[in-house]
Length: 544
Image (tube, rainbow, N blue to C red):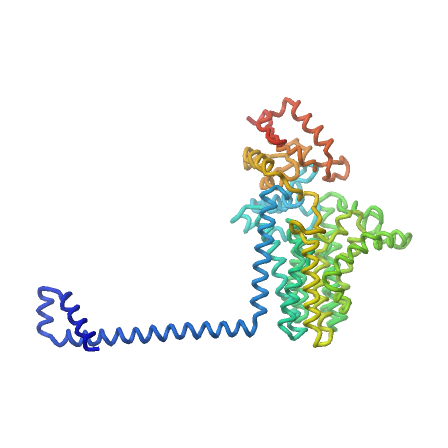
């Protein structure tokens, strides 16, 4: 210690100032020694303090590690949410950049959100080429909430990413609900992971983008809040759910009845049921006709069973066999099996909550559209949350010693079926959606080059896949409608164009596409400015 002090004194002498400052130090020679002593003590104190800080840091880390080891499941659930979201976003980003998404339905939502961000709430271009508010087809004003975010990041991937993240966060109320009813964080964590592994959740989350898909996590939060008797929080969820689609009031009404009958909450349950039913009636019979000018265009999906809500009721009374035939066909039975198998049917142990899925299941079964009986589509949005939540309650009704095993079985089956039939490359039973066929790299390059030629604000008409990259503008038309367009982007390898003149639909019409190309190439109104690998770009001659 003495040698150390001498060394410090020498160092201080070497750096001693000159002039008056030095004279002052000579007057007080003891000050130098005292300063050195204090400095030495300060160094020693700093070393001790530093050592104490390191010890505290190690102690804190030990406590954190011990807490994680004591309760690993919340951390595992959060980690799985982040990983699941990242994997699915990478997949949807690849689909978008590879032109495996389309104007229907991603482009439609992008145009409605873009218009809202530019002061024209939910305006979009219909298949007929007319401008209208989106409420003319679907009552999903929740899209308005995307506008501020879209102003910050004006990319279709924003909508797709939010949809994926929202679905992932549905794992939290599943975990909370299971933890409360199973009194086991392990079983709760396993069921939350099973929710993320449920194959039809991933399919729906990747199908960019449908506002009604947001109802999946919202319904799960609504169930959690009702189970906690937190009615104001439930009311907020209910408002958001109603804003995802015109039919979402019906499962809300059924959920209110469940709250009354299963939880004994008669008054709030009936209020929820009445409000939900009233919303769907208002949306279908008032809002859509007001903006569309007539009944909902989607009534055509139910032509076989009556063609309207009133028609379905008449058919139920006059020809119940037609209703039964629509609901219990082989495709419908297979659809129910696909939905139930990953959950081992355990939701049947909580039949009251599982029954809340019936309004959507009935609507799907009565529809003439084959897509509504496919679990890969957004039509399961008001089915998945109730089957999942009912599975949680069903597992809670198993003997206590078998609850973890029940959760393991659900996770195992969901995982195996998502490997077998999930939306992953190479999945044996995966179904390629009509717009998700792979596009060769040279064709992708041609599409990108073609789209880059179109000015950002120019009215444009395009085929379906190119449309997913072109709808951030006020006027976007689907081929063959070109009346207001100044540019046309034509992908001859994408035959999905507007087909029928009455009750317009989009479908694969290759002959119509070829005829349209010949018509435009012969027209003096249009000038071809680009052609590569079957992708053509035309500019209206008068817009030079």
